[in-house]
Length: 563
Ligand SMILES: [Ca+2]
Image (cartoon, rainbow, N blue to C red; front, top):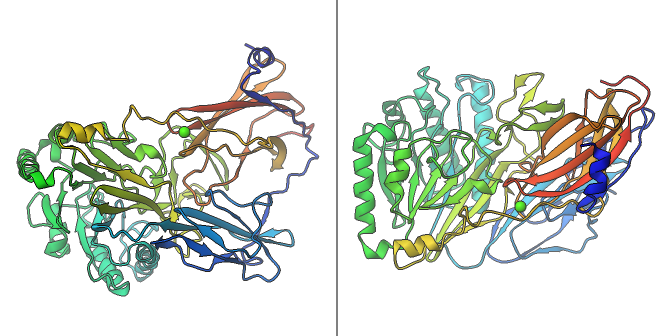
């Protein structure tokens, strides 16, 4: 069916726009010169507060105007201008800031404020995964002085973030892939992890903080981990599974590399779960199970789940909260938490994040097809209260960037980061309440039945434009849609007006995993013909496939040849 015909049929629910451009039109992206205008700073550090907090914003560049947003998006000239009146944050908020002077924008920064109450949690811990220490900067061994300095700088920044949220957490859990062994015998790099963590715990005065490690697929052999960690960080059990009691709560650590076929491990786990839950006092207490690989059929997996037998072994224990990594899938996406027979949480990645595969992404080098890896580091900050668990998703580095430049893997980015400590989404609250196991399960909220059904929405004026772009590649530009959770991607179809035949069908990621989130998409569209009329439709889609109304527009390319 021709687009023109579709237009007349489907006017309802569509916003119809029309733009024209020629090659003579000049599109000027915002100038970006960090040295000229300094990024604004806040009067109070980001982190965890027990009451609402009032902040002021300041650019250290004289005469610069500060723009800000409180919804996690990149401020621009249409955002609120900071006027000197303190901003009061009563709930957890990402404060994103940018300064502007003489046509030049500063770097953007996002400061995450976690607002709690004076109620004291019974337990506080950080769950992280996929550190891949020893390889993440292109230094394959991680044992050169330069490589060590980079790792140290990164973990200095990371522990500054931890310390700003949890001053003295009960534990830091590492859900595997602490190092980057690929069957090449790098197990000794666990000693680097131990040294870095010990140094940072001492520097930040985390005297109460235990470190617990679970085996991943890049951690070499269990015996290497045993050899290179203090016994209290791991276990001497030859297959690397164990239990610790932290603050009165059971923490079980599994070896997910071979759980499915390790009958001894399965029997041990089943016995432990049975023993813990046979005590009526434990009916509504979480049992935290940390392992590297996500459990089959739970959190979004990127085809990386394994251990179907583990699902069977856990399905009668709704008190279980599984903390896993391995997929690197980002925790901005609410599919990173799942409840059915128990609770499963993806803890994110400390080296680079991924999105589900099959999408395109805008990078500094243009539109990259099939791009799913991004230079962002994340982890979960978990607090246990008597009646609930609160989970805050935190970005150790949320700065926008590209993981490949010139085709070369860029690895984990190095500090300083503009957005260290930004929030990766709204807090999750898990309640394990009920007199029976069935009752507990009935109170689950992160279930497939409760699956998000709210569609993304474009702003009233999406300011949709096709511009000349750069390098003779036209640039599609529009203000981002918003969603109640995360705005995942845009379906873009460009068709020749004369034939109605689609020449481009794109699924472009919205960059929702960066902090701040870009407020508009600027998508280079290569491969169009010159002097040709096109129509285009753009639909915003959330992580669950809910779709916005479709924007529709037309444009005609200029007379000069296009790339
Ligand atoms: Ca939604």
